[in-house]
Image 1 (spheres, helix red, strand yellow):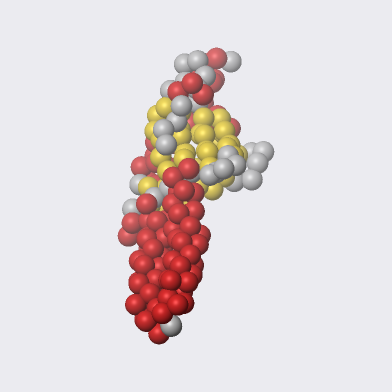
Image 2: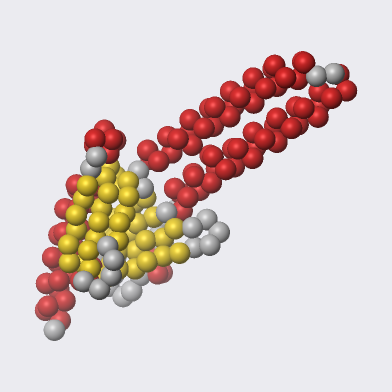
Length: 171
């Protein structure tokens, strides 16, 4: 999901655009495989055990339960991942999330006092981490599962320095 250029101010441009790391899709993918396995086993084992007249009903019940499980365990997490984006421009950090109800947060780069990152062993295995942005007035903004978090941390620091010096020149 690309960020619309019409939402940018005059002289503002996108520096980078990202979403959370693909590793958040591992559990939904495993859930999909388990649902397929369980539905296939259910149809293969339970349906032959039922009387001829009830086989179609049992098959549809198994398929219905599998579809509900698919939506809850696979489709919704994928859509949450797909619709959660982080866009950094030369002036601000823009977060957007939501499938039906959209929410967003815009944080001017000159308001950020500190940028920290954390990487657990699991994060390091996948090349991602958590970015925490500190401002003077608000609670910290935490961005989990950022791909290549060290490089993103460095780029944000450079942009903050550049935005601060450009802001100081305007004053």
